[in-house]
Amino acid sequence: MATLETRELRYFVAVAEELHFGRAAERLGMAQPPLSRAIQQLERRLGVDLLERNRRGVTLTGAGEVLLQEGRAALDATAAAARRARRAGGADGPRERLVLAAKAAGSHELLQKLLDAHAAEPGAAEVEVLLCGLCEQEAMLRDGRADVALMYTPFNSLVGFDSEELSTEGQIAILPAGHPLAARPSLSLADVSDVPGLPLARWPGRDGRYPPGPGPEITDQLQLAQLVALGRTVAVYPEYGRSWLWAEHAAVPLTDAPSVVTHIAWPPHSRSRALAGLIRTAVRL
Amino acid sequence: MATLETRELRYFVAVAEELHFGRAAERLGMAQPPLSRAIQQLERRLGVDLLERNRRGVTLTGAGEVLLQEGRAALDATAAAARRARRAGGADGPRERLVLAAKAAGSHELLQKLLDAHAAEPGAAEVEVLLCGLCEQEAMLRDGRADVALMYTPFNSLVGFDSEELSTEGQIAILPAGHPLAARPSLSLADVSDVPGLPLARWPGRDGRYPPGPGPEITDQLQLAQLVALGRTVAVYPEYGRSWLWAEHAAVPLTDAPSVVTHIAWPPHSRSRALAGLIRTAVRL
DNA sequence: GCGCTGTAATACCCGGGAGGTATCACCGAG
DNA sequence: CTCGGTGATACCTCCCGGGTATTACAGCGC
Image (cartoon, rainbow over all chains, first blue to last red; front, top):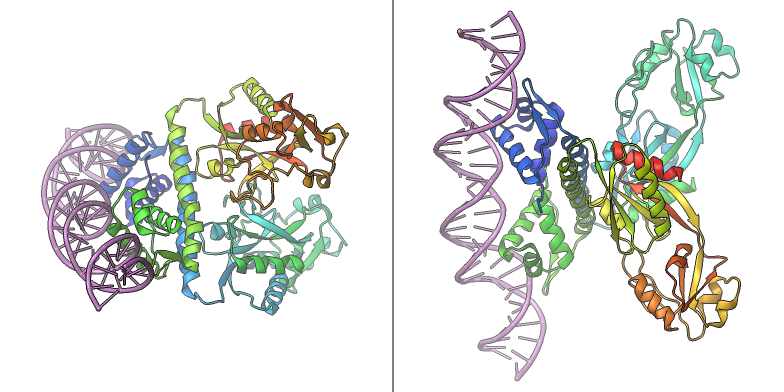
């Protein structure tokens, strides 16, 4: 059985992502020839062509696509094993430590309630909060930087994790304060998706790409706040966005936007007592 | 960053499972001293004690428990990457191949319908059927021996996989043909759980252990069939068990047994067109 | 007390292979 | 036809993974 070392996977993923041996070697901190040789050996061992070497760089074969997908998952799992083992041993006392990943732009209120409730439990594990960008919670759970995360459907995908539903809320339209639509008691998606002179802001999808459209491409909450305040865009945002609105902003409930559901999610094979305690506290909120 | 090679994980898992360096080394096909050294290096690199060496063998520390869990998952993911890549490259033509894992004791009828319907689709992938024992589908999906599986809740756990529900059915009591209870139109769990002289058969749980009780420990369907036919036990079994009953058996519907739901399940990160086609066919059944 | 047994750790050696440098072979652009 | 940029090859070095022999130590029988 060909037993695929971590090093080989790392090398292959680098080449498959760069589609260029030289750059991949640089990224890996090594010279190009040994990298070429390692990939050739890997292909021989698997008995499969992974890369198509043509003039001007390389492309992935079907098997290469598969190995890229699966290899990334395997590397994540390996990194997770290392990180979680190290963390479990760091303070090997009775008090375990948990890392909770949460979107920085998420609901502060919910997070506060959860942490307070958990801290009040007797013998509760210490919880470190790791705030991250838009959709990084999934990667953090997968590669072990976090043990548990707050995720928001439909923005995050819960695929591959265990989860419990915590709360559901509607969405609002965030408009410049003086805009005519801001006076309306409620709006529909159709109302805000085609406002003359006020294009709808575009968020990156799960793959990091932006949907097409005339509106500005948003990367973080502060940028969005500025653009709305400047009267350049209108945004669809979960209810919890009300907590950071400025005086220059107006929020109007949307009647037909999909609900945003907050979940607490964790890797499915977790067996930790500390994690179980945190989840129990969360679902009781 | 300590980057945990596959080899190290393999070694550690072997030692953690055997709790004995000598036996682990034998299982790995190597000598004991290099294994000891490798584990020591691993502990130094992670900066964490994984094993407690006391007189008469070793025991796992907390960090060791974590690394065993996570390490197994990582090794499975790595093996899956190798297997799936190799399979994807084997016949790199337009026809992809899929491996479907199904419990040998499962519903033959459903499997037949699924395979027939799928084969009728134009351009459908070739499907290899891999029949396995009681609860092996999960391991097969995890380590890449299979791409997709038929699973039965509550017997199998869907945790960590994507899945779609295919069908739901009740459970029956399987009794010796001549038994008084066999004449009843229906039974409850209480009726069959305490029949004098006819103890309830015990199935292994997800962890491979048997619940306590007086009945025989069942390992496969044939053994169960024999024991019931001999008048030694009564069993609770899904409806689809009717297809293999003997003349010596009688089946009576159970009114209050949990329903058995058949799912089609697959690894969450799969992106294969062939797999998507099979799933679409399955949910249309 | 003294071996005896079974455990993991240490000492030391050897060979394979991972990685480096220099160079080649190839192809498209100008 | 050269030149720049690509990946592949040739060849060397040395580290480290693995082997054997041995030690250290704890329990057990007598």
